[in-house]
Length: 337
Length: 169
View 1: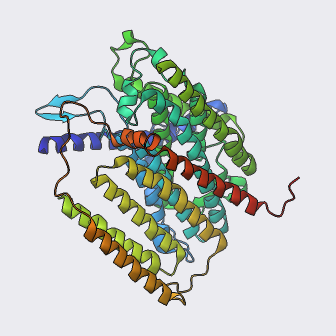
View 2: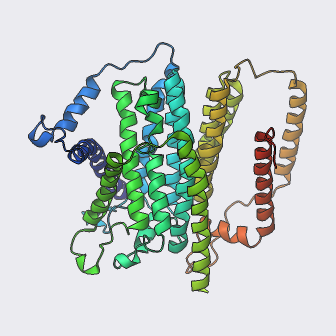
View 3: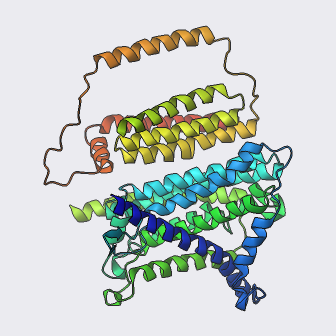
């Protein structure tokens, strides 16, 4: 009992450390990638090649003044960034990032914090709770830009969450389970077993919805600088602002991890003969591929207009994902009969 | 342990439900409702109905309540006292009726002291996602389809109401 508890605590501490460091260096990576794509160098001043830039940013954000507008609803203004951050953080509890459990002095650590049998549903439910942070933060600021940004953002998150949920169903039908560990295990033995091939439509739909759900370019209407200043966090400053920022990057990591697990086989190596590389490395490589994709898209595509976004979500993506579910179910029924 | 969990979730549900009525600011009421949904999900989890807990959060907290908040924020609903209003006598009457009904139901229910044992220890039991799926698509297929039809009618009705002023050709 006690040993189990210690094992879980070790995994939680390790995961928190890795996730928070990744988030810090994602900001650096994003600026570097964008810089190189725009023929610049990106941050170069702090440390060698600017490697200490995230640290400097962190110190800046912590030491900044925390301004609360006098007309704001203070209680909700204070708690909204937390509501946004916490669901993003606890979503990592069900992400299986490796294959092997380690045994050491009677303590067992698993490559996940918990394997509940509704894993993917848990992640979806938490991401929908995260929308409250945005909505409440925008409302509590008592500013028109914030409110409009929040309403846009919440509408966008709800519409695209539906698409993401529908796109996932095809994979769930193939794997026959909601548990992320079992979905990964079902794709073992070479890249031709990965669900990206039978579910290519779902993959594209999920990726688009994922980008829209995390409010990234080209779907970053909620924080369109030219129209809404900074959207729902216009009035935020200092640490509270950075909590929103953290939540956004964590959601990016979660979307990338889920895409990796559902479509690219998670920790499974692409060829069985490449099994000597630790599964954890494969998982990280795939997740970083998706994160790079996020930056790549941001450097490449212009922003959509709001009505285009909604039309695209409801009139193109949703019917396509319904069609994908029906076709997948039909094919599975025919094949297994 | 289980009793402690149940009494925590149960009392939290009751208190947050009271707060929904008590707050004058509709946003606070909506937030209390969110707290209530979360605790109901917790209650499902201690009943080992994880699927229901997940769906509870996904549907009620994730979709329905966000839409409530939308309406409240957009329409600037007046925050006058909503605790005591003209229909209070009727509400009290209906409330008493409901309490009598529920207590009658509880009195007539036979409670099992323990859950029945799992029939075949060697066989792997189905998770509750699978079980709900099985029951929904076999035994309760007809009510399930009727429910979806009702939702479809509501959808069509909403579109007709929203676009009522447009001329359909």
